[in-house]
Image (cartoon, rainbow, N blue to C red):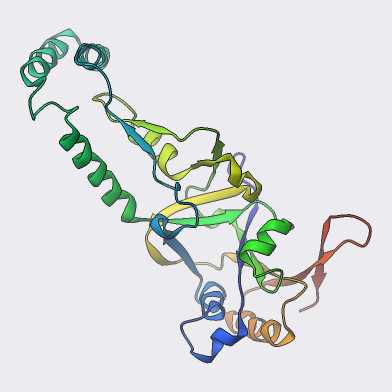
Length: 265
């Protein structure tokens, strides 16, 4: 197992029987794709329920002297004094003109390029545990849906989300944040108010991705999940031919804990 990555992560999903009347359009059809078709959906961050998600603050805000100093120092450290001297001459010739990188039009252009790059990538989101009451309430229709257990070995790069007090600032200055740091700030950073989700993420081509092996290892039913819905999903599992187990989430009789009870197939 990869270092610090849990063996399983969990995808909370609604399972609405009324949506099943039009095949291919409802939440059960999405679950069918996940189980039978080995599909994992990488959604657009622009459709997420957090308006700040994947929308970092960008910064080129500094004085001409500070801008010049930072650019020269960074160039000197990475490419040597000769390159730094050339950069200094170039920057001095553009300060205060429309070619100045700090010009609002240039910042807007950089932000538009960043937004386009973000829009072309999709994000798979999952939780670290299957017994999160708020996740069952918010994402599985008040315990009437399901939670799918995923084997994390199918993901090339699964990372834990960082929950922050302040929005991350992407340093757009020359020699600023590396691509790796930008990705971390954009895709793996959220406000602390979302910490209850205990989220893990993977990035991939936006839309449906199909894996060679079965990623789902268990289906957990919410306590309010209808019997007919359970039968339909059991049919998906049977059709898949995969050794997928079943479980049910039940409130503990003496505490606020949710108990996971395995069910026979």
